[in-house]
Length: 185
Image (cartoon, rainbow, N blue to C red; front, side, top):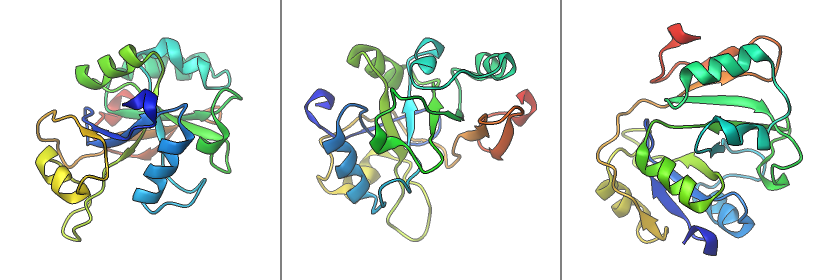
């Protein structure tokens, strides 16, 4: 499905995410329409299988950032890094950065490994005004009403997003405290 411009919902170690192959502009555009996001305005991340793929999509970063990622990943962290020219232009924001994740979720990591390249993800938000995130695969299926090609049920997720760290400058900066332990930073 991913290789054929499909959109899927995957579990992570935090929340469920809409996902597509990073090489599929068509699937990315579908997700952008589904989430009602304007090009270059959404929060998208790449999920990599492990640290070895991160440098394929980012400009060089300091040893401090590498050690921080090595201590935190796989885990519930999103690292904002400077994107290099391998990142398809459609994913770059005006700041030319990319969010990178290596979640501690065997389902999603195996999916990335089998695909052979990272997947693009963005959190599934609940349309219902009562809560911000959808946490259950059945709830997501009812909410999306056939707008995705596949939903992988990884059990209920928590209502806690990933911890986001901006590593685009010399010193990493905490952007959002989430499920990941801030003390590791």
